Length: 433
Image (cartoon, rainbow, N blue to C red; front, side, top):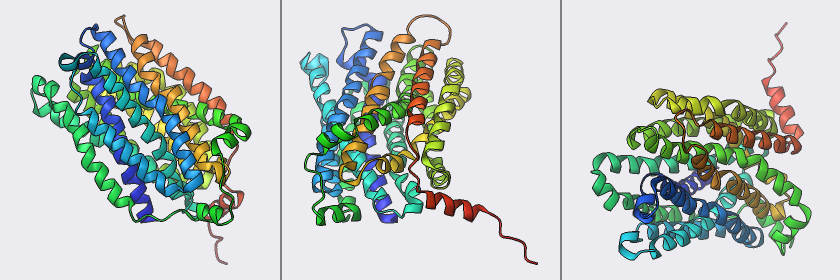
């Protein structure tokens, strides 16, 4: 399990490095380089528009790779998705700017971002099922949480490289070629990931389904016919996680640098410190999910998100590094209270023969609802006015309340015997006579 968890963690870290480095570049440099004829606000919105395309293509990737995963195995998904995302990311680093090739530049950016999202849409389902279907029942939450640590590592790598480059280069050098370096590095990381995944075995559950001839012939059709309500509920439930994370990691970065006049180095440091703590606590939260259940933690995380959005925006608006960090940290701890357990929760909600498609489609539709729209909506709501952008806080609070309602309608999936055993282990031993 350690080897499998490490391989899934490294793979998701690499894929999310690819995905996040684009978001950071969109917040910092893509607007003026690829949309120079726009106003600063319109340029940022246009850059975030290309960012959103990656989320719109993720459900399509989950359908495509989910079909492969449910039909031919989880293992092929891990290779194809990583290869596609890696190649698309390297290509982004090679696209000439608007000044060189005109309108073709942003068009190429859109196409490559679409391919990035397509690959990432397949990655999550394959990586999560690799661990979830190998893990023992009473530790499924813990082992499944390792792919969920990958996004934190990918974010830290992406932003760490961006931070080093922006701090070590002049502004002209960074805008000329420095921002491209992380995209080129993605090729090396993808090669490492493919090498690590080359020795992985297929999951026991899929081998059992395949041997019995019970694999789904048309997984998407079955999910749409028999599990459409579940897909919509899981998408709505997880939307707040995406909205929170991208409000912190993308919108706040642009707002802090453009509106508050905080240096990009300070903003990146505040966000990265909060993300590092989030990643470190992920397995510990997952252990709680193995003991108390998946749904209770998700409800707590949603409620905490709804209560924290206004304080987070107020702390951000102070432009004081430590206070901004506290605002980001509170939001991300609420986020991980949910997302540490969803890697076990979603696969358990779906039947094994359509699990790769169902879980991945629900997860990635949530990305469209929460991740694709949030930077655009938040940027629009925060335009104008000198006070804190309360409209952003209200928007995020509403998303959290909608997600809370969706989680309330979902069932618990932790097996009763596992919960009973966990409760029994927690009881103190009776005192000897």
